[in-house]
Image (cartoon, rainbow, N blue to C red; front, top):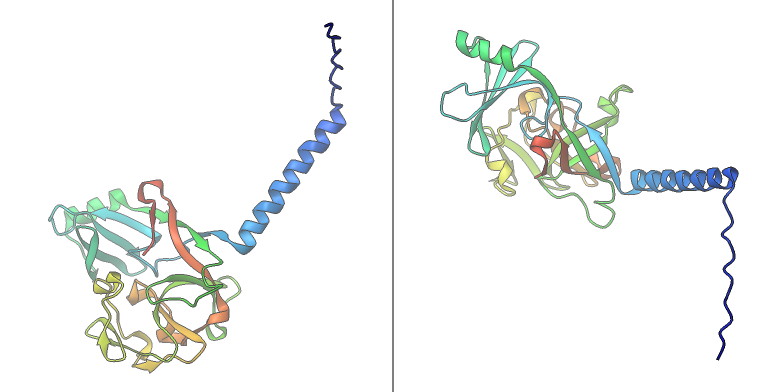
Length: 249
């Protein structure tokens, strides 16, 4: 039985205009997808200050073994001197200002001093179906008493939930009269009663937030709670510097 040879039609060559149109369509689709992701799910955020040190860094720092115990401590350059975060293993257990370091340590600090600004990912859909939890690191629109056009967004850690009594006692966080140790980060964070802060009850519809670097952080101790509607998302991953990539907690 004879089979008729099927003649293949030659493929039509794309014109330059067709190729350009296809590339434009791909670029537009990629742009729309990126805008959707940025608007509704994930946003990149650069740490603007030192208020969340040692968890997140946005300052001029050096990593030097100040107490000669084998661990590199974190030294932060401030306007009035140095702030030392004493490291033990994976945690920073002590924070203290140092007006004059020993000469050899001053030299090491100067040699290692550099700007470091962490870059993180923020989940903007994190609170669509449930409210923030204690310990969450959030970014939010600054409440009206503190708002400045040049700094409209802050990043802090949630410490108090609606209706809870928040207080600082012996440098530790207390909620409803009990010291907070969960999540474990609160075992190591130390707080100060700056701005004349006293125990206070978090209003309904708000959360209280503190910076991890308590001595230099302007937070709920100064201007009160953050309305839930001001929260833009939850910080969940540090992607830069690459050497310190990790999920945040």
